[in-house]
Amino acid sequence: MKKMQFKCRLLTDVIVNSRAATEGNNSTLDFIPGNNFLGIVARHYNEDIFSNDERMEIFHSGKVRFGDAHPVVAGHKKIRSVHVPAAMFYPKLKSAEEECYIHHFYEEDPNKKMQLKQCRSGFYVFENGLGTLARTDRSFAIKSAYDRENRRAKDEQMFGYESIDAGQEFLFEVECDNDATAEKVGQLLIGTHRVGRSRTAQYGLVSIEETEFSTHEGNAAPVDGIIAVYADSRLIFLDENGLPTFRPTPEMLGLKGTILWEKSQIRTFQYAPWNFKRKCRDTDRCGIEKGSVIVVQTDSAAPAESQYVGSYRNEGFGRIIYNPDFLKAKEGTNGVAEYRLEKSPAKKEPEPQTTDTPLMRFLRNRQDGNDIETMNRVNEFVKTNKERFKDPDASFASQWGTIREIASHTKDESSLSKKLFGRDIFDTSSKFDANEGYLTHGVAEEKWSDKRRIDELIKFAEKKENKGRLRKTLINLAAEMAKIK
Image (tube, rainbow, N blue to C red; front, side, top):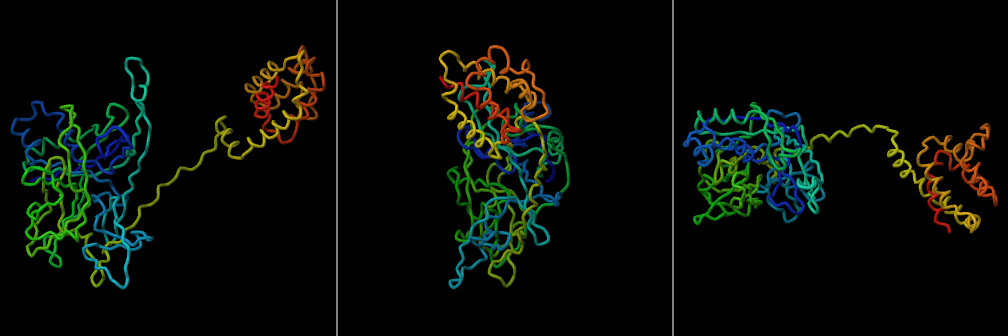
């Protein structure tokens, strides 16, 4: 048997949904299942590079097993991480980093009862007494289906996609019973490919290259009369009737003995895979989730090496580890885990950058709460001068519309003041030019000089609170005053 080791680097975001449904809340897996790499090789199924016997061996016999790709842990790039064991528990109101127990070695003390919670998420590398967490960064985006006929987005076809961020690396193995077959499989895997969903869009581009790394190994000898079977990948077992079962026998696990269900920790999954080649769904996958621990009471040793068990091994299902080191408990303790879990470093946030675009100015003004103060001043002016601008012989709606247009298209506050009033109202040394101001010459001047309307507007505009916010103030004022009839 030959084992080949590969590193998969994400060149773009990748979507690997946890279920095949297209509706509802879809979340992505935090690892890349082995059937994605089987699919890369299966694209060449009908090519002449494979004989009929090789097709049967690679795709249907289980003699070639494409393992799951687990995320690389910072500082441990040469060790393949494993899913946190479901047998690890920590006290409620505490964290797993503070205190952690191995379930099948823990005995509840009636005088000191603790409510324990199960560790369920995350991939770790266990080394030198520490379990270091892998950080799998994700993103969420809303996309629309495309209407090719009308060249626009389809109606009522919105999708929410969660994806694994680009730039991250994953490690996986491929086992081949035939060395000659292994060489062909390896050549087809190396290179740039697309995996996951929405491959024809912006997602799924990965680069695969050969590498070398170590894996967590097990121990064949029973510990205190038991062997803990750790599910390194998802497990699928079929009973004598060919139906999925969540209660495997010891023989299905490659052991002799009795399964201690009360000490085991099993989580399950179910999904319907989509066969891209046949354009239909395959048989539902129902099995035991990655990270589960099955405890078997036995006096016999386990096989020398960890192995694949159960069904669908070619897709990466069925890899188990017997008595791995990270399921050991410290001697003389009540099941205290030998490995202490440690968090990965927090993601470094980018340093904030200052920009002076109109959008950023708007957001800063909203944050300062100045909009509320501006509207309060505008509303006070409208209330005080409402009757002053009611004139059956002179309509001011178009006048306010012009004021709003000038304010909207003039960025400089000094220029705005001159365009409206003929001078800079915030600069006492500014010279007055009636012909320059819209309200100080022509037909507009006659209307605004009546009842001292222009004086009231200037008095309002030159308030110190409006300095730096004159455009915003006049735009809002013109909008409100135009409503007066």
